[in-house]
Length: 58
Image (tube, rainbow, N blue to C red; front, side, top):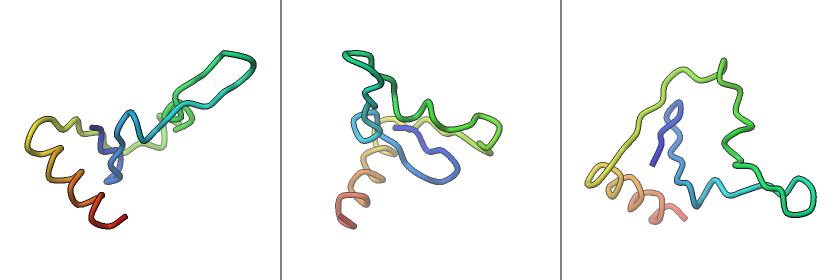
């Protein structure tokens, strides 16, 4: 799980965008790297806690 400027992203949530035919690109690639203030990589218990909160809000 990535947290980019306070917004959690999971690879499966980010998804892929179909460009042409079978070509796909990660939706995260559309984020301008100059606009990112912070990136955190969360694993294990930290990621579980945030994912549980996201699911409860849905």
